[in-house]
View 1 (cartoon, rainbow, N blue to C red):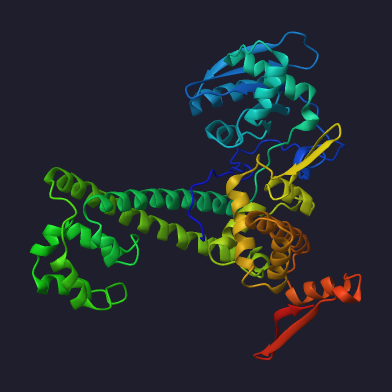
View 2: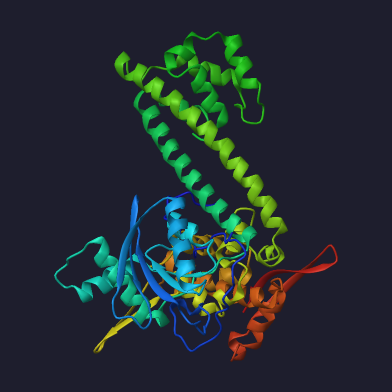
Length: 473
């Protein structure tokens, strides 16, 4: 991955539906209007009841409204699989396995995954911001408690269900890939944090070693610190021992071993305070042990992610785009999923991912700004792809240069390229066809309105194939 910055992770929620053979309830199309343009239009079943659950770590408060009854029921259940199963079993017996609409303030979590295995429960996840805003509108005083939150959620479910999305899981392979790429990124963020700690502590008492090795992410440097955590201990080691250690890995070892040993011998300690040196040495050795474990864990993630990615039916489509490598291909597959109805058009994905800007207007004022409320990990995926494509795609480079010439900043130009890539990606994804850059560039030429703005395609023959090498005006 090109960037290891720590980001919040969020994809559209998915989970495994592992239920016993219960009756399935098909939700067909209606004229419901839902956000992000990716929810199906549904014809609702004859609901047996509407339930809202305000979840917590130890217990859950719930409120239930049964059609035809004026009194709203309330209760509480413990957060254990046994207690939840008993509660759902009572509902199934009471309503004869008829469908029940359930809403909860959770799009991915323990309670959602537990409830997902019961086929008679149709889940409507709620965004915490939606519940908070609706509660503030209903109770301007700011009063809040768990039963009250359940009442707020059931009001949303009963009266504004057309604004909510039914939770539906993707395929098992796609969900596994989603969890793996997110967990891998968390481990990468953890490694980045440890590396920053390592660099900061070494600058305190042993700064020379940062110049002896190309990067603090060097395995050889970690092993060196395990043997000699400070300069004095390294200087006490014999020349033969240092040389044997450095030449055991020719690929990561220094080019000139003798020069390396000379620098060790002539080094001057940054501090003679043994309290600093001793404590820092223990801290550094613990950090490098954690880093080696993390490195092995990330490699394990990489192997499993690559195996799943190459077997995924959408891999030939995603991998056909320029700038998509081993790291970005699984992230794009995880972002898209396999259910085409989630993103029926490019606009829905552009908006959901945060690539499309937001327009605000009030009176005579109107302004456009970047979209802030979006899954940050997903947005970063498309921005990284756009960044990589500039060096590998002629029209992307030309578009980036044109945006910069108009005075746009780097990030704005990258988002503009990502906006275009999503439009192409969604079309290829829906058509189940890989990307053809020559064909796309030809369509750009056909759409040119004036001869002065015509674009000439420059190609060269490579191994019997025509390869796009550039564009010229």
